Length: 561
Image (cartoon, rainbow, N blue to C red; front, top):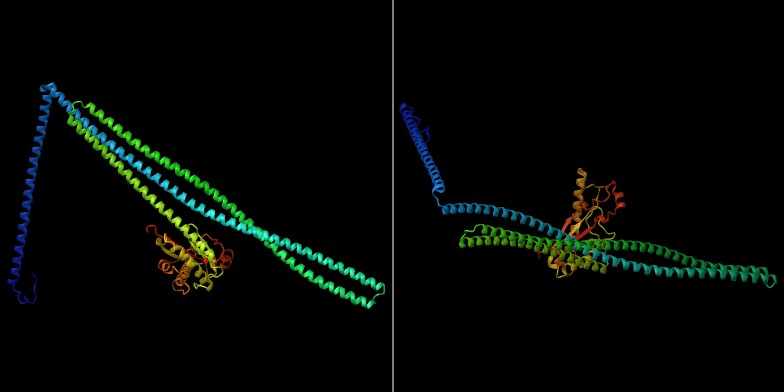
């Protein structure tokens, strides 16, 4: 209801306001009546509830009295009126009830104990499973490293053979040069002897007046000039031979130094290989010991379970023997209950063993997949290494992961630049067809290649100083951001050339392009370098900043395919 002022504007007499007061009085009377009715109803319900409660209390008290009277009648009957047979049956029944209660309690405690022991066994098996997995992983890695060491030793043996051949050749050349120097010395002595003889003959002719003094001087000068020419020619040849001899001796010394260094590295490699062999043998022994220990544990668990079952059976039969008055049906029922409980324990144990077996199989599957991936990566790295060697591409190849660090020689990126140089393009033209063929030309692994990542880097310098990546100073943060962008742009310039380059039309180009990814790492992987140097120039003298601009090409594999 709303008050319309305009409609009732003229109704300002007393009858108008009197009608509204009557309305308000009627409404208040209605609400008062509702309140009184509700109060009466609430009071009635309360009285009824109290009355019912009193009735229930009376009934409960009557039941208690009846129970007490029944107990009194029972006790009186047992003490005074019951026969011996009835008394014996009653006592036997009470004993059986107590025995059943104790059996139920003991079975509950045994079940709790068995559950706790099974949980402890599961933890122990999981622990041994983890230890076996760790040993297998370490064994696989050790095998891969041994294979790599063997290849390194083979390469070093080949290098030593080449150096020995070079030393032998240089020694032969030096011997020839030494003989040639001796020959030239003999020729000089012969020329001097011939000159002395001719000068003596001329002097003798002069003394015998066969020559005039002028003719003597002329012939003497001619002999000296001829001798000087011969000696000059011989000395020139001797000096040339001596220079060649000196060069060869320096080459021999350098080659000998390289040979000594290579032999030293070979000795270190063989020592590391021998240590790795001992490690593998130790791991194999540890694995065998763990397997034996695990088998012993399993047998112990099975034996413990069998003993538990035997003990439970003995307790059950002893309980039956104490209950001599049981009927055949009751004995059969108890036998069935015992058998059902044993079957339930068997099923539970079988389920736990099945679960552990499933976990073990899953772990073995993952180990097999990891080992297969390691083998595949090793094979790919071998193919890349052989292919690069065939086309003359220098690269640092990780023989375990297959990561490739391209060596652009002296043609790295210019400072603060992401533009590819012509020599860098030539390296990519040679390297990428080999790399792509090694990945996608192998049917066994081509479908498992999930991505090929081009990762760019930058040197840890900015505006003529070395940047500290651990610093929170604004200038260092700005340097990190700048070098991160620069490293990404460098990787992207290689990506663009692989994608759009007119010289990048090779066999597996269409397979490579969809898998390409680009990322930048700035200099964050170089944090272990010496950063005590403040000047970028001094830092680059001590550390090769060109090598810090390297590019890594990395492939990822999906073992689920």
